[in-house]
Length: 122
Image (cartoon, rainbow, N blue to C red; front, top):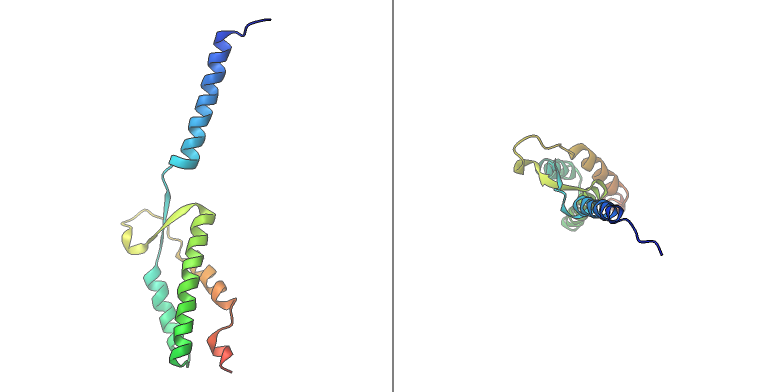
């Protein structure tokens, strides 16, 4: 039986080790990508829009609860899909990309996808 060349074994071992180290860094150790989201502005815009609706207290609470749930789901899904960590805009000094328009668009779509209290009351 022929014995393997120790230099080839060492090179293969080094390549496999480097590949494993890179994969571990890429999947486990790489720093998170940060983006910002203007949550305060989004909530304020929602409050201004919902104030124009003629809703009783029960319907208003339902709408606010649905908005809160959708905001949580949309931001979580965005973070998972784009592999980012989302900061509120006030927490970032500068140089962090703002994804507010994208998240607001997704949130509007999520809110329209459900029956609104205004249409339920009719």
